[in-house]
Length: 316
Image 1 (cartoon, rainbow, N blue to C red):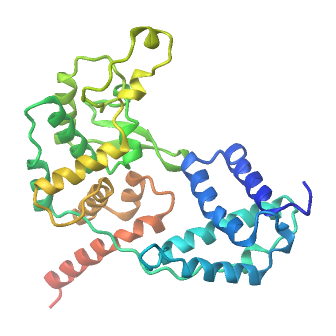
Image 2: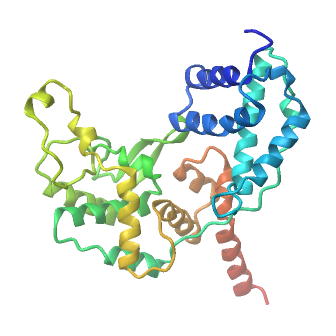
């Protein structure tokens, strides 16, 4: 590899390395490409990698911090700026491994990010959310099963929509999912969620593989296209992340919840409920599929509150 490699070409080689050698997810590749595209835009596509110096990086960070949207508001949060720098450091580490002359990634410090807090639904809010779903047709039964599953398992939305019927054991109420970073974990269903899924699947009259599918009147597929393999009915009918997000927002509105409710907020609610009821942080980490306990520690506000309640009860 040439030591006078230009920036745009170097970024492309880095992305190929992440895809093939590191076998990183498509989402990770998209993020790296998005963040590093701004570096290329700022420095210039033809700029030799070895000529990018610390002053260039400092000016790049100022550029990120001063970006504005169409209303003149800051475009990037401190957290998002940090993601740009994390991508830059990963890029520089790759170059160093390839013996390409570049700035040492250790010279680039990550900015201090305000401590993250999580918002979740209280039990009364959850009850209102579930009660807002009318289960008088197959779509309502599906929606109820989706929301129950999200709250019962803490699944990410990407994990939920990929579920196939053969993956789930409704008798043992557990199954294995492939999460972020290609990591498998065991997920457990509550009795309510298992019953909801079973009731929904009992109404289905199709042989499709996905657990959750669309029931709208979409354009009918030609039989010859299906036979020829031109149309994958399983993927065409599989419910999309966008649809799940819409469903959660819609039922939150019907329930009269003033909070912004998302599928990920149900994941937060799942973790919070576990900790409130005495689960330890390490177990919650495993159930959420976090690779680091540091990520799970955003929920320590719950354990801190529980400790305070114990202190108030037993300390005079």
